[in-house]
Image 1 (tube, one colour):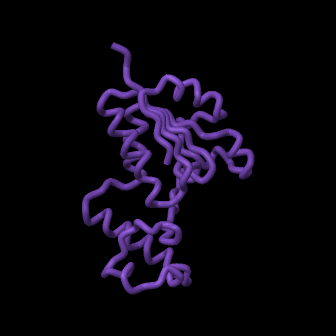
Image 2 (image 1 turned 30 degrees about the vertical axis):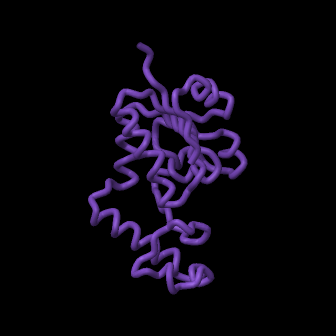
Image 3 (image 1 turned 180 degrees about the horizontal axis):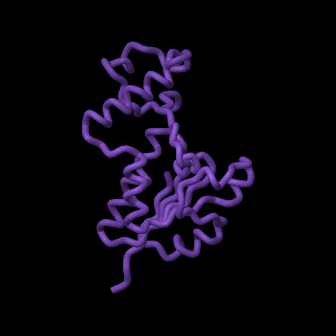
Length: 159
């Protein structure tokens, strides 16, 4: 029987959007899937050695707000200075309190499980990024290279 394949495209670079590709990728690898994650545009932030990701409550209407803030605090208030830092701090504290692994731990778990990380070469060049800032074991390649894998994948996910 041929090994199942999971292809993930990671496009977001915020703290809250960083978890799904690593959680799903590591879980699928543990279940015996061959996994590749294609990091493009803002998703390339997830490959940096030094992660400094933030939560952006703006444009995220499904984000649960503490103390029922979503009922009484106007959306415009989320644009106030310091709100991003406050929401990021609250998210990190909640994750730690619930025993959720850090992004660095999840990313390392993926790599230990042989999840392949593909950094979109076009986007790296577009944003003048330095690949030496990425964790080791990254493959720089274009979309065509990723489609070689994704075209045969059992599951494809876009995040």
